[in-house]
Length: 59
Image (tube, rainbow, N blue to C red; front, side):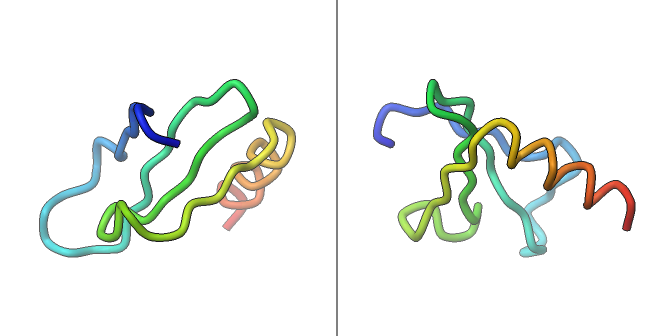
């Protein structure tokens, strides 16, 4: 996933809180930990990402 533009939530800050970054990819949505940008990354299919968002909004 080199050369990918990662975006962090606008509500994120530099206080060390938990935050993820997202990237729009042809295959789906890339997800990574903003505090460990060289660490593990997930690739979610668009439908799986929508399901994740729906579940998070219900919390």
